[in-house]
Length: 236
Image (cartoon, rainbow, N blue to C red; front, side, top):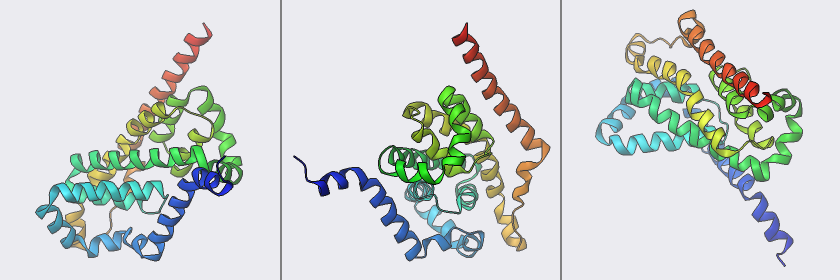
């Protein structure tokens, strides 16, 4: 018979690992690097590293993005801007989508085990708001939440796991749903060179402009239409 200590470790090792990594990130000062000021200060070094070791730099960027999402650290927008700045709009978008999806999937799997009792109690109110949609139309509902983030990103990562959503639809909805917004921020990041030269800051409010927001709303509408069509066929 397994000992109580071994049983507890087997159940709670994801929580222990996440807590250790989160503590290391704050203690080492790594979180201070997730700012626009830090990106502006170290831009020459980062650009030189990407030019000298592009494959290694791309892998390091993806790994860093996985950590930011899995640990729910602040600075995701800055990371996405950095991806566009360092790798260009197209490759930056691809790398960010891979990193963000892997990080969200890691958090999803952790939530299925050790994190579930902690998160469910502390986010019960928010969870109750999204539970019916996720239980009824998990893929399309989560896709809509990804396209138009009306709930916190960390909640959209955790809630599907807590309501029992299957992993494959979760991963697919996450990867597809974050592409449009990521492409916008990566495109802004690709133009940071001129902004840095002028000593300014990027205008992230552009995502709320009609030219960008309306297409995102249209995509979200198509997602909801898919959920409606699925329910109609199921009830027929």
